[in-house]
Length: 203
Image (cartoon, rainbow, N blue to C red; front, top):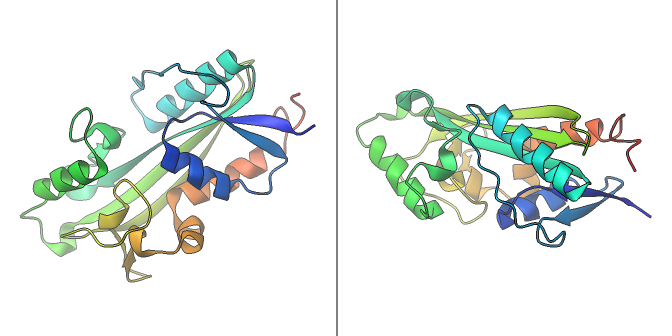
């Protein structure tokens, strides 16, 4: 029987992305819903690393499964690194992706192209029910566009432009996005971590 790995997120877009990114690992991927877990973790940490650790360790302990959680954020240089770890809550509670994009572009309305540099950061935490944790991270550098472009992806993808590819993240095919994205980079490192103790030996 394949060992189980809990995807510790309620974001269904992330679940779909991780199913692709983790394809081929020797674990059965389990969602919070399928595990019957309704706990909402308060992401009160002061960093991406701390929030990822909180989610992974608490939900691993509750489920008694290995757990993978991430926290990711968009860091815009002209905004002093905002929204960062607050990316999902930047436009307030209950805001949609479109609301967050509109709010962010409003903050940059007078900022010229050459000052619109930004990066996506992702930190993955993989945890055992015993509290053992390993971190994996990834970064993707780009620019913030003046208006959304593209229909793929989610979050801030439609306004994150990759100069080397000449497209926003939302204009990339899923295959290309997974190769270059912050989450893709971190997930590839997580796949390697899962091949080593204590994760490879946890039953």
